[in-house]
Amino acid sequence: MNKKYLIINTGSTSKKYSFYEGENKLYTAHFEEEGMGFVVTEKINDDSIKTNISAEEYRLAIGFVVDSLISNKIIKQREEIDLSGIRIVAPGEYFLENRVIDKDYLEMAKKALEKVPLHLAPALEEVNCLYRFLGDNHKVIGVSDSAFHATISDEYKFYGIPKKDSLALGLYRFGYHGISVQSVVSQAEKIIGHLPEKTIVCHLGGGASITAVKDGKSINTTMGFTPLEGLIMATRVGDIDPGAVLYLMEKLQKDEKELGAYFNNECGLLGLSGKSADIRELLKLEKEGDREATLALKTYVSRIKQYIGQMAAVLGGLDLLILAGTVGERSFIMRERICAGLEFLGLNLNKELNNKSEGVEVSLETENSPVKILVVKTDEMAEIAKETYRLSKEL
Image 1 (tube, rainbow, N blue to C red):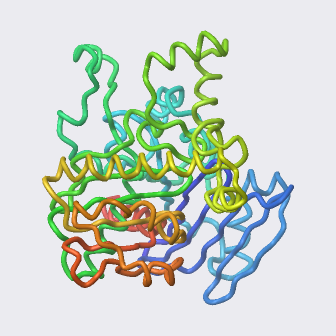
Image 2 (cartoon, helix red, strand yellow; image 1 turned 180 degrees about the horizontal axis):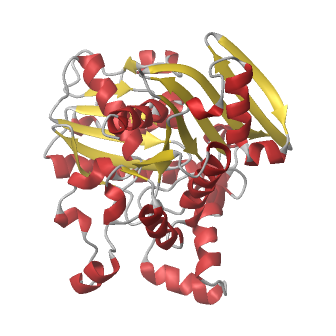
Image 3 (cartoon, one colour; image 1 turned 180 degrees about the vertical axis):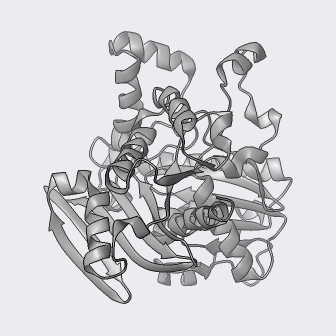
């Protein structure tokens, strides 16, 4: 008999769930903030239902999902759910593998929590909710957001600190967005018919990263010990001089936790513009002559270009550029700005086709472009489901 399992992906302001029987997806639910409240959008077969919910229902979303599965006759009782799979964002060698979450796992996760509280805490809360609604013996698989980057070699893994400190503290560049990168790389191979040797993946959403993929394996990526390193993001700082960190701590009189929240929530596009972290809103403000919005957008694009160049150097060339995430999929304006001036790398964008393409998977290079430019919709939920299904066979 096919196992029945629940897939979970938690964010800072949203939660996603999918229910599978074997490899067949039967149900999805997307919980998110909307206006001053919360909503859930459920999909069962071809029907989509949007419902206003309370803050408590959002917090205990798993209970809502289980009740909905029963009321819609997808399952008869909660005991039918054999296991669950959840995305885990945590630094550490231990978290470079997908594992069944047990007491040892939870102990390791508690230690990692102080390093990435904003990313790991929601997932651990979900695990507790799973045990609450499905019992203490319910099996939960932690699907690592870093596992795809386990192939990064030492020259890109280590920071320039004493190696003995890296080893003692487990302080390396682990990389994140691995589930998304794996998803779009797999899809690109199906779309093209093969996977080119030298691929760069740009995951451009609220969080953003760029990964160099050689022969299907990650060899370098922009995120490091935590998801703060690399590109300027919606509200995350990206690369910053360590000396500047010390200076900010002194002048703003913030402790480690306060500075962590500052770098995660008050910087990036929001910090530079002083108005919004949303690319769409910043583009509107730019049209109206807002200088800070213009600066935020220009800085964002310049860092993306800088890292595309860096990853091309790491790969020794480029065969395929994949644009994914909300910005990569939906903003033809930003895609054009990112590709502009990169013709020397072989990136020749078909501007007419690009301008017509929003939210669709499409090849955007010109006929004579040496490098393919592909927009791919990332499907993290499907990727988590694949890993959960694979590991379920070993249980």
